[in-house]
Length: 216
Image 1 (cartoon, rainbow, N blue to C red):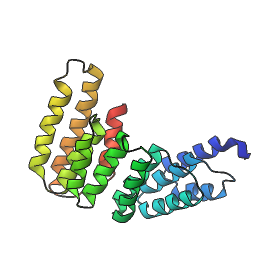
Image 2 (cartoon, helix red, strand yellow):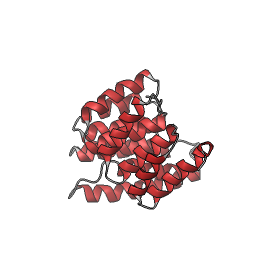
Image 3 (cartoon, rainbow, N blue to C red):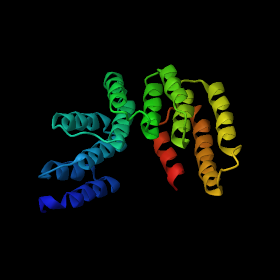
């Protein structure tokens, strides 16, 4: 496959992960004559989604070693992998780095950081990040609610839920499509609340549900 077709190589990696062919994705990535930030991000995200978060973080460190600059999406995926692996030292370091890069305003990075700190039992850090965000999308709210649940702060979660309802539904400019997305979010969240009383769900799932609810 010609090196100029890097987009095709990236699409193949994405397809392998989408079909749960993780080993094929890894082998294909290793054979790539040239990689860009999309290639690395696909590997980091794909490995983390399939329960191989430690490997995802190794790929991130390799990416940095090659001098490839990550995008906001890259860092969102890396922080999510840190949350999955409970890699507090690395995640805290990345937090400082994204601030220097002025990526901290990205809402998915903020949501990932909230989830990361919550999973590492640093819920006050999660709250601080949440309170610093003036504009909060569904992903940011979901991360906070999930973080409260994981840290057994269910009363705070219920209070946040009420604030979320007021924030979205009290505005005259809210569109019907937005209400549908929120209805999907509340359906997912209510199911999570019921399940969280008996088990701890995977740390990266809430953020992915939120992205689904925000885009469908």
